[in-house]
Amino acid sequence: MERVIDHTSIIPFRRFTGGPGRQAMCKVHKHYNGRFPEKSVRHVIGLLKNLKSNAESKGLDVERCQISHVATQRAVNGRRRTYRAHGRISPYLASNCHVEFHLVEKNKEVERADKQ
Image (tube, rainbow, N blue to C red; front, side, top):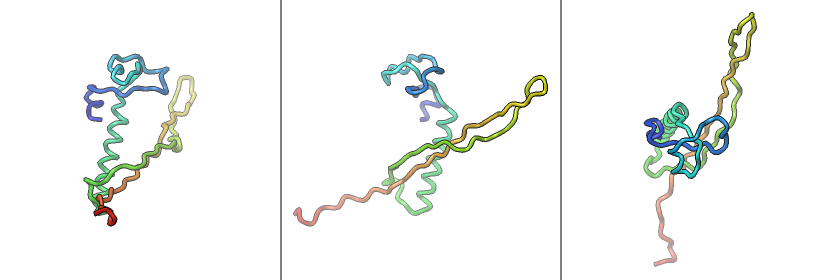
């Protein structure tokens, strides 16, 4: 993710391909549309740092933890107003989302009792 912020690696856009233009860096991913979503990547990095500190405060061993589930869901739009020409007012919406991570601590490998 740090490489996306440094613009040395690109994230391919496979679903919403009408807006982003073609980028030569996407050849690595066998696709042609892509961007560098720096703002989103910075938010995800912040969430992962928060996840790590929460695991440490709960007493989990961070080295043995792994993320088992990630989900993103649409949230309520933030409503503001923007003032237009001729005395009009238009909505100025922010499309918010909820992101959830499930962190699980892996168990140590235990030998079976019947195998000697």
